[in-house]
Length: 160
Image 1 (cartoon, rainbow, N blue to C red):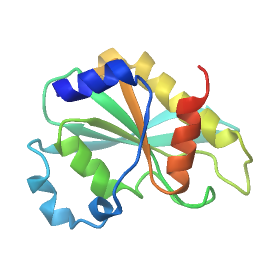
Image 2 (tube, rainbow, N blue to C red):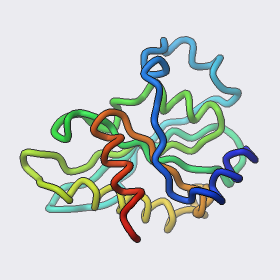
Image 3 (tube, one colour):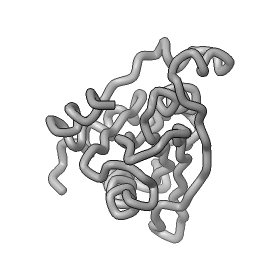
Image 4 (tube, rainbow, N blue to C red):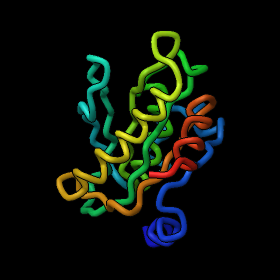
């Protein structure tokens, strides 16, 4: 975990790429990836345009505070949901990260920058609930696959 804390000092909000080979891993082999069992739960992290924005929490069964990562799913900016990265989200959590996989507003019903505003809301939610969630408020990263990687990079580059 100290490596993540060091990374957090350098990049408090960073976009990370994921290897497609990890996403193709078999669910049954996840226990070999990390050392922690993982609890999963869903929460509402924000409301926008009359919608409840939901997130799936993947929490390793260990004491916090933990570094956190927001997973922004792919889907060509117009499809998919918080469950799209369940294999690698579980693997990241089993390695000791608190993972927050989010739903966000998508095209064609919603246009840019709605999705990025939702990502920012997810980061603010984690920071404001850091003590209750037992996470490090200053060590929150972003990960995304495909269009989610694009959105994560854009969110990481925007001020505030």
